[in-house]
Length: 282
Length: 332
Image 1: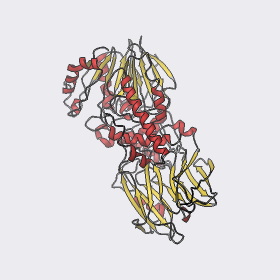
Image 2: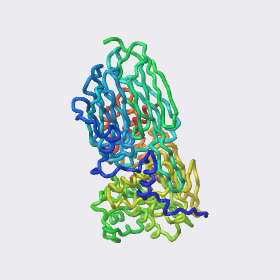
Image 3: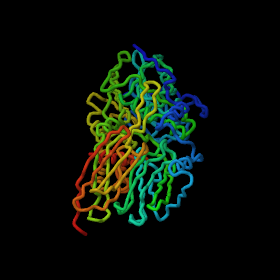
Image 4: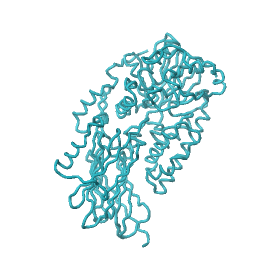
């Protein structure tokens, strides 16, 4: 019988090696964990996002962040940012940024909104790698910043922030769906769910045996317009779950068509349109 | 079914009493005849880590250490999955290695107690850490290291995360490690242990996208890995629709004995039917929630306490199954 030599070095268990590899990459693989809880990465993240001198107010009365206490599935943790102010021309939420302190890439992304949304509430799904603070930072149209945070426990068990069926994810790459939640009425804030099928690969470590390397490939940008009105712009990163899904609000008009353009980190672009349906006037 | 016999004592560990029969193994020895008759194992929680289960001979030359029906904790050393080995006329094949080096070494010790034949094959039934992270104990051995064709990719994607998680549960679980398979199976493959053929079958995405079963032709024993859970709630980490489809052909007419990934040995049919009932209802309930435009939170609120029906470890896993099913079924 032919036996195959398997060398001890192939047992991938040296975090030092993994961390060293990770630091050499622009996109850190999942193994690159941030430090312990007491070494908060937030000051650095904040400085990167907003510079050192912008004040960040408590978000009370502006937005609320709803998270599960414990992530059930590390790959899919639903989050809701609930807006507590109306989207009026005088003052509205123009950006919402999501941050997961202890993730390899802490900034999930930024949603850009406008009065065309009516309500600036957003629901989406993220990967959560560890026990971590999750932050939502709103920027209002007057340039002020408001932050709220929540602590989320990691999932445990066999759950992992990884693709479940990698072949299926690639086979369906770029397929999109738009759902109208409830009955939409002309001029009234109405909820939509936009979904795009994409593995949102976070990039995987170099395997020492096979040199297996799965490069990061993720949704970088989503642009949604209703008629000629931009209703959502998202710029994201690898902490967004596989098959990104966003629930948000629009104020529809008769005859509107929703247009979606999605661009991923490989430069692939996916486009689709959906005519929307309005219910009878209330 | 043949009488079960226990081989080997649990290897000594730093903090345990070492080589002495434990209450658990004594219980196993005394009740093994009735267990063989009823095809069910007692559900006894360990009083301490010193009472972890030992290997049992479930069929001639086929040995299994039945894992505890628990989550991985410091107290149970992560010994929660069924792991085993099969002895041919010339060599031995190991089927899963447990959660860490200690469990992998326990497999080697049990093999040494059962036979002087060498280990030729190391088989991983899937990517999860309770099944193949004891592979580290086999790292410097000459053997065929075999897994599903997707296993290298899955280990690259999940392995470091699982290792960190294990170390976080207990420093005692810190010495775990996987080995990327050097040989993979895309459909089926037969291996010969000397007048004893094992048939390996790689399945489409079901429990995970790395599920591999092992059928021992001599005793007609099927090692299902986690395609079959007995007693403990099945955990979905692949494809619900795929899993239900796999269940249609998982246990063929040639199979007389089934070793599930978790739970007692048996003919497998009752366990399979229970699993199918759970997964079918999960599919139907989540489809309905999606049709009703519920988001994931809404689906969880509606469904998290239903479908319980006597399953062990329901509360820790059903919610996650709902989330996982939702993200699959919303693309139907």
